[in-house]
Image (cartoon, rainbow, N blue to C red; front, side, top):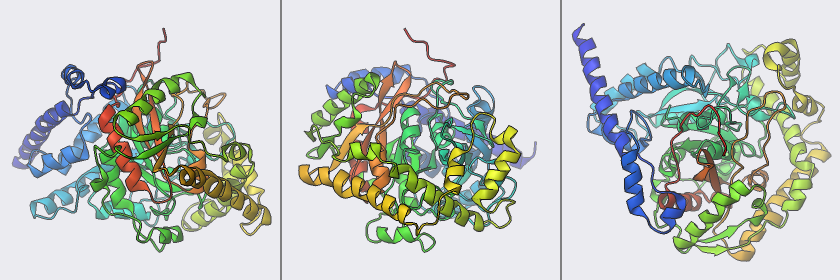
Length: 554
């Protein structure tokens, strides 16, 4: 063994010892109801029962402290995450949350370690591995394909803006996450977490349950401790749903807070890029690196003077005190196992000093739920936006939506073995974005969701935020019949372009995570992060996955 090899072995050993210490600090807290009555003794007892382990439940702040103290390097961290990915994602339970890992991650880590040794630390993400959803461009040796074989084989020519900003912040792009192919906008009978490129991703809590979508792999990888944090995208529920059912925090930012340049699109009026973390603090830390006006995405101009480069100052454990929070009762009563977790969560809000306004229903929600304009806008925009995106990658073999439809038909055995492409075909039949039908539908969506929806109820009741359960517990994966989801609370904010934060609130039947959502007006991320963090600190509801093969019900 050479001297350099001996040094690497010793360095990895130091890193592993550091993580054994860090893992012991990352144990789960008390149950939601117990915390509501202040049972700290229960939290300490449960912490002692949970075994420590490399990488399990460590936070970005933990990792930074270990690197600052010399107990760990970014190179160590990349190698350890790769080992865990091999153990759990490609073997073992075979989660398939990642499609590929970055072959250059080790070299990037070495450069960042050298910068640290020279006294240059770029910020809180320096040396932190992050995974990107496979619809976010990276101009490197990895693919960006939205899960489709049609786009695989040729890398993107330019980093997405959010990718470039993460690199500038010192983050290491560790890999690409699996997703519901084309961000779940291809079939009317899709299966969340399935893509032609990555095949079926699994839920790390119960392996035969859905990881939801479309950002399924981004959420599952973070939950399974395969990476420190990740990026997903949301058009309607694609961050908050997988966040909820995979037991992690997901921040769906205001449309325009983060750039969509270099991101495979569905809708320029609804798409947004946001982070996943195991804690609110981790997700907020990543969010700060993504923001800022971007000439490549005109929608970001609206964020001027409203974005923050660091959202950590809003992490207030007493942030619920005095906040006026409205309970959207329209999202209760859908599923009794959701209510069994969400109702005690309301008690926590009250116990922590929030002024709870109950009910605070969205007046226009019945019209939103019945309106064909919700889907119509997406069909019009997808055709225009995906054609524009494909034009930015002239080296691909497909150049238009029509080409994608033809490709899928020619490769149906790979791309359409379980469900078809009805939404692609419906979008292709739509006209241009100057169509009166499109303009009228878009105006209807904005009116119902904003002035007659979220803004109306918040104005009338003088609310700081709205509160609702995020989604029903994860359903069984069914490749033949598709998803069986009872719906969630994301649609009004999706149409409005407003932010959401989902945070773990409890476990259904002891094994399936359920999250709750804080929602607010445009660019109210500081408020939502403050409320979500205070709720998280009061409940400590997240539990790490058990990788059960199936749920055994009593």
